[in-house]
Each structure stands twice: as structure tokens, then as C-alpha cells.
Amino acid sequence: MPTSTSLPSQAPKSRSNPIRLIAIVLLACIVLLGIVVLITWLILKPKRLVYTIEDGSIQNFNLTNDHLSADFDFVLRAYNPNKRVSLYYDSIQATVNYNDQTLAFSGVDPFYQRHRNVTRFNIKFTAHSTALPSSVSNDLQLEKRSGRIQFDVWLKARIRFKVGAWKSRHRTLRVSCAPVLEFSRPKNLKRTYCYAEI
Image 1: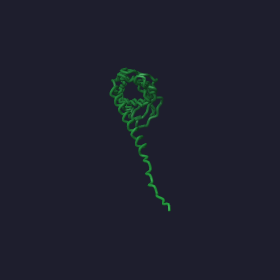
Image 2: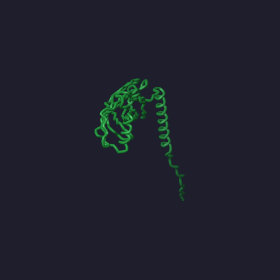
Image 3: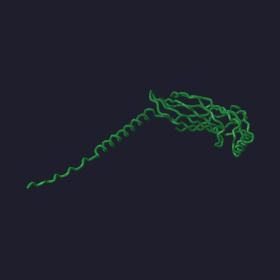
Image 4: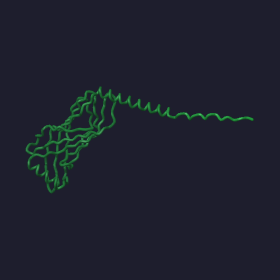
């Protein structure tokens, strides 16, 4: 009488090997990328960009019934201290503010800045009967009587870095300055250092 014997069932093949291999490859790529970034940083040694307001004036100032009209003119100095890094300024938007209240908008034409370069450009603002809250208008009027007003100039730019033939993706640059304008002299502004972050 024939007898049947059951064969031992084979254990399913482990699926962990391909997953483990993929994980190892990904980890190796991350480590390699980190090493490349570190080496690039050590070679370039990027330095912080420096921005200052060199000059400024305010003319045709008229504050009536909580509405401001005025012409602002600032000279901004952009210094790129890096040896190998150049910059593309693809767009620059600017505002002049007082007590977090925007008084006027402006813009700057795009430009390219080479490494170890100083570029100066004018930013002109015109406030056309800008409506202000009464509290802001009162403070502005009081400071005007003292002969000195501190304004805030904010810049927001889309920039790209260039090293050799390589160009970075767009980054957002924000610059904030707090120049003090005096009404007694048309051109009397001391150099004002700005804060910049990317």
C-alpha cells in the first residue's frame, strides 16, 4: 500500500534584503551629499552679506488730517565680501515704514553683483496722501516737531548665488534698516547698518 509523505514546507524568502539594500543606498547618498556640502562650505567659506544705508533725505513732507505725503530718497550700499560667490538680484521690493505702518512702496532694477564688490543704488519712495491711524499720525507729528524721525526701510529680494558655472535656486533675502532722518539738514544721515537674513 503506497504511503504518502509530506514534504517540509519551504520558508518564504525574506523580503528584507531588498529593503535593507535600498536603505543602505539611501543612507550612503545622504552621507555623501553631506560630505559634498561640507567640503563646498569649507572651500567657499561664505561670509555674511553687508548692507548699509549711506545717505537719505525726506522732502515735501505734509501730514494733514491723518494723511501723509512725502518724498523719500535713500542710498543703499550692498557689499559682497565673498571671494568666489557672486549674486543675481532678480527682483527687489522695498517699503518705507513708521511704527509698522507702511508709508510707501518702491522697487529696484535687477542687477548682478560680482564677488568682493560694492554696489550702491538709490531707492526713492513717494507717499501720496497715505492714510494713517490717528495714533501713528500723532506720533509722527510729534517726532516731526523734534526735527528727527526714525523710519524703517525693508527690502525683500529674490536672489541666486553663482560659483563658477554653478547657480543656486532662488532664495529670499530680507533686509531691514532703521535710518534716522533730520529735517534741519537735507543730507545729514549717518551710515546705518542693516540686518539681513536669507
